[in-house]
Image (cartoon, rainbow, N blue to C red; front, top):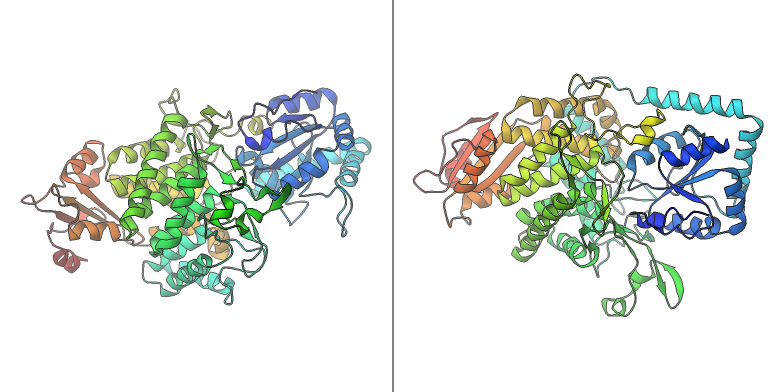
Length: 625
């Protein structure tokens, strides 16, 4: 049996390398083998910090009898959903036809052309509480393939046609201020008044929703601001937070936030860091910064997450490590890290750290956040920015581990999340170089008219090659449970780019990405937080504040005001005079002719790039606002 996974970049794939199942990695080779043998494929999708993925691996995929049975009847493909999010999204969408309870591990049976004809999540080794065993399900599915193949193929093709149709979107229109208020009202209706958060069990922090509520609250919506603040305060003291090492677990299995699933993910914590920094809640923000620096830091950046399981006293324990004090933890091995570095999630971390770096009152925490953001940005661009393509468009790698790049295609979320993170870093540091890279990333994804294909944006390397070769639905999933979609992230980056350049095309791009989702987002706000956050900014007057400081005057009241200003629809940027020149030279028109008056720190307040008389005191600026 070939050991095809042992050299994978993904720790999740490598953890299955010793299974008796004859695993193939995702790619054209597995499907070619299935066609050669005339058998279906079984696609098993999970990730390294997934508790039930570990359980199913031990119970089922490590069983020699089950493995022999599978090896005779299917070609088995193992996929890390974090390395191949497009593959995960495509098959998760198909799985929705078979079950409302979607999650991971996801087990998909598909034709040699990749069309799904059955899907399920975790399946036990023996039947339990009405749930059939993996072997029972697999036998029934493969019997259908053998005995009723024409019917199976027809059904699978029909499902794929339906998925293609479901991805079509109308142009739509942007939500009004009133409709955004309706979305807030809907979220208030979801609030758990007793324990905080949204809904019952299982309960997730849904950070994109909190960021939307903060954006809406910054424009005067007290209900939105109050809901965000209450939720963050309840989360801070809940069992979802690790008070020893900092950081938050992915979700809780109970309504009162107890009995968490103990994996700690980079994306959750990056977005929560931004939310806590914007809320002025210093302790949990500092805890996340500590968690990044002391736990998740790996060669090349930050690990994607930390496992929920550890070994204590020779026994496997889920969450036992987190019941220990700091002194007790020092004497045991911590849960393993998924030490691959992902472009998108690192971009989220850069963004969260950058916001913390300019908003936290504690000088030490703010400085640590800024320094780590700069370190991550420099390291990621050195390792993950590939040579430009033949058209001069920027290209990114999706993932790496120990400096070795994955061959997985970068996605819209990689370009969008990194662009947003770099823009936040540029605003925090005043350095135009980060914004220049962000502009390259946004421009690289814009589809020119001759490209067509019915979309506005697409990663410059194209979609996953194996999905494309099989004609499978491969679209950016617009919903955002735990993290922004690629569409929402690119829209946010494009809107900031418009504020910096005054180029209408960037605002038009943001509007065109948000408008088709507006009706769905307003009606289902819990799943579209990042989209609604951009919509909230688009609904406000476009305002810009530039403060240019004279040498040695970084502590000026105008500088502090700009760094603390956090109003949706307004871009506030504090730079030194030399930095202003660099921004202007790099093509950011907002900074054209921005100088100090009489060597005094000077503020320029603009609406739609029409600026008022420059002023040199906070009192004068306040009068203009």
